[in-house]
Length: 149
Image 1 (cartoon, rainbow, N blue to C red):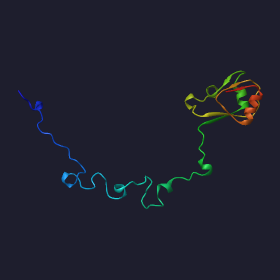
Image 2: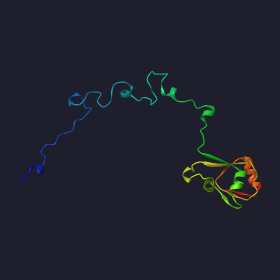
Image 3: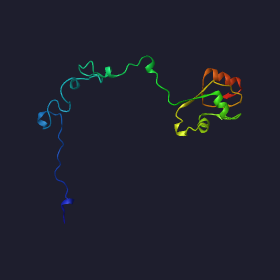
Image 4: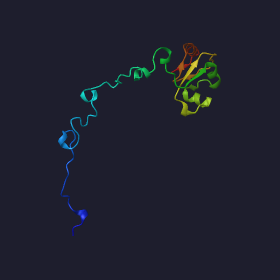
């Protein structure tokens, strides 16, 4: 017994073909091109903004000259030599993680960098790894006999 849901379809309908003239039933000579103008006839610059000179995107972008161009550094932690002298024992490894543990910064906030400045004196021999130094601090650390990696 044949049921309606098992019948083979006997008709197939063709898709309407856009852009094949008025006789196709869909559109005319500008089908699929939008409106008229430069976008239809040729290529237009992405930055083209019509005749709006004063309010174009180029006028809305900030000037990138001088001191405003310098981007701020993310999370720069600054320590002096006398701070490191108090925090660490002799022959300890001084890197970002050990400084974070001692000073109470969570490890999730370790996205920044640590810079060592030359305030104070260093009498202990320490091993430094992955830190930034000012020129005077680097000279004092090397003079104290510490290793910098």
